[in-house]
Image 1 (cartoon, rainbow, N blue to C red):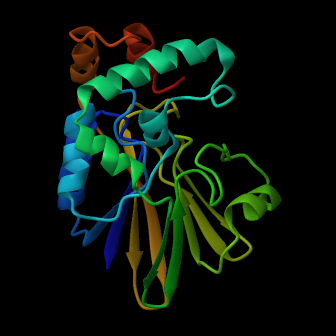
Image 2 (cartoon, rainbow, N blue to C red; image 1 turned 180 degrees about the vertical axis):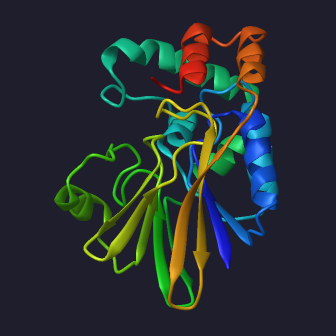
Length: 238
């Protein structure tokens, strides 16, 4: 069985269209979504509509929490708080009330079993929507912060930098970002797991999308942080 994990769409419905089309060509049986659906992109409502049309399990990310209740001091650098709050307010103005209720009620973790393979999936860490665990952390740090269950595979998002590692006989995967990659490669990222009864194969998939189209969407909007978002999209966070 092939299953896909996507996350960090960030209102980039153009990128999500391309990722879903790519998944559709790969005989994937199920898609799981690990949060950050609509904040900081030009099409928040369409992104939410696409995710909800999948009729699948979706968990909450930190940006979804921000849309629901705002950004608190200490959750972002002080210098960014005012502008990101304006971005949050803009996102809120673009989505339906039912979408806010949907985001509010999302769970924060998935525990899945396929055959004898157990998977634990969450947005940032099992205990936080906000904590950052980067690819270059030590095995000990990753094991302590990320691998506190009896799963075989641990999957997370949040940092927008995909990787796959094996620690203490377990696999940990960051699936990167559909809509806002931060690793210098301006291509959407997601993960595929091919699972058999007692074995599995993992892969990170990178997908081209029309970055210039999304930049133009920002340019033609009244989004409050256009130049910064254009730069982030063009340079993939670098």
